Amino acid sequence: MTRQVVAVVANAATAATAVLTTWEHTRTGRFRVHGPIAAWLGRDGVGEAGETVSRTPAGTWPLTEGFGHRPATTKLPYRRVTTADWWVSDVKSPYYNTHFSCAPGTYPFDEAAGENLGQAGGVYDQAVVIDYNRTPVVPGAGSAFFLHVTNGKPTAGCVAIPAPDLDAVLRWLDPAQHPVIEISG
Image: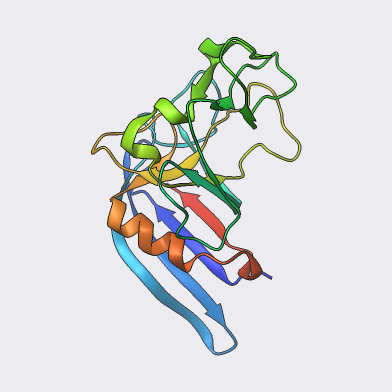
C-alpha cells in the first residue's frame, strides 16, 4: 500500500511549471510533509510522453531508486554515478529506458540517443527515477524521466526542484512506504 505520495500539479497541461507537495498517508488521514514547492516540468507541459516531445508524463508512477554525483541521502536503493553511467534512450536498443554502465567505446547502444548521467552537471547531484515506461518498456514511449535538481529552466520531461527541497524529499522517501509520484496538469 502506498503511504508516500509526491504530488506534482500544473495549472494547465501546457504549463512548464507546477507545484510539488509531498503527502504521507496514515491510519488517521493524509498529512502534508513538504511543500508547496515550485517545480519545473517539460517544455511541452504535462501529458502523453515520448521521445519526440519534451513533455512530463501524466499519471502515477512508482519511485523505486535514486542516483547522483553526491552520496545518498535516501533509503531508496541509490547509485553513485560517474561518466561511465548512462540512461539509454536508443529506441533500437534492448536497454532502452534503463541505466547502463560501461567503459567509453564499449556502448551497446547509440550514445547520441542516451544521456551520460556523469556529465549532466549539478542537476544530477541527486535524483530519483520516475518509473514511467519501465515495466513493460515500450520503445519510443519516452525515457529518462527523473525528479532532480533544477537549473531554473524547463526540462526535457523531468520534474525539477531546488536542491535543498530535493534533499528533504529524498531523506523522507522510504521504499517500505511504496512511494509514488502523481503528475497532473
